[in-house]
Amino acid sequence: MKIKDPMTAIIESRLDIPSIIGTYFPEWMDIAQSVMCPFHEDTKPSLHIDPSGKGYCHGCHAAFRDIVHLVSLMEGCSQEDAKHRLYSMVVDVVPEAQVQAYVKYFKKKALDYLRGRNISDDIIDKFKLGQEPQSDRITIPIYDQFGFCVNIRRMGWLKEHRTKALNIKGKGAVRLFPEKNLIMERRIVLVEGEFDCLVGRALGLPTVTWTGGASNWNDEYTHLFTGKAVWLLYDNDRAGREGMEQAREKLAPFTPHIFQPEPPLGKRYKDLTDWSYQNKTFIFDLKMAIRLHRFPRYEKQVKVCPCCGQEIRRMR
Image 1 (cartoon, one colour):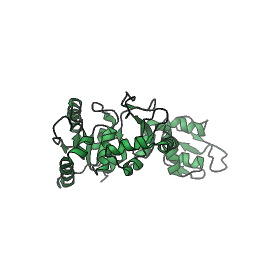
Image 2: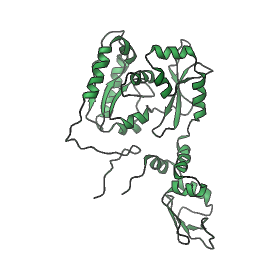
Image 3: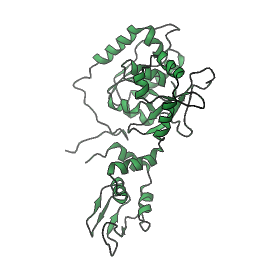
Image 4: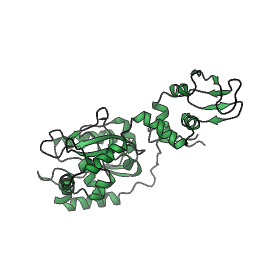
């Protein structure tokens, strides 16, 4: 059985495929009837299309295996381009031009604030941080695993910014950041907040965070942690400790490799940003623990679909 790529799987699970077929073939009904084939001079309906988007013409033998293939043929574009067009209908992506406009507006005072938090210029450039002109908030674009921007977090850093973070209206669902890194890496440090995540990345740690604070979690994405080694490193306060306990419970069914290092104690040691320049020994020891962690050789490596979380099994 051939496994579909994750993007196509999401398209098929979330789009109304019969409606898309109907835009190209108004006479088509979702009972898999035949229609006039556009790929040759058809004299009677010979193109059979089923509700999944799979089709075959009994006249010219044209064939397409799914809705992505059909759209590519009808639009005269590559299947990759068709797939991206359809996926954009699913996620309602944020235009890249908006991300770049914030990047260009970035002012020195905001840049100095990030540098003071040990967020390097390389990380600022890599994750396309910027600044919103109206509020002067620092912007962090949130990309999904396929590289589409699905939200822009507007982070408060000035005294007048009473709200810690704002989302684009209608796009504030709790997600993972950076999602693609989580999928590509096997060792993960789960931290609290985007700024701490960026600090960790600047330090060479495989940090990931939820876009919603210590107490927020989205079960839709928990399967992305399957089989990974996860170090829990939330803020050193009551909310952080409660958040780590929740994280441990949520992750337990998906991986046995969960670690909770003891952070430095004291009021001045609140979060990863504080530890990054006040307790370099802790950071060094953490990096060594991550680097030296070995997964048991006898452990069966279960492959899961990054879209639906189901185990991928090979046909025998």
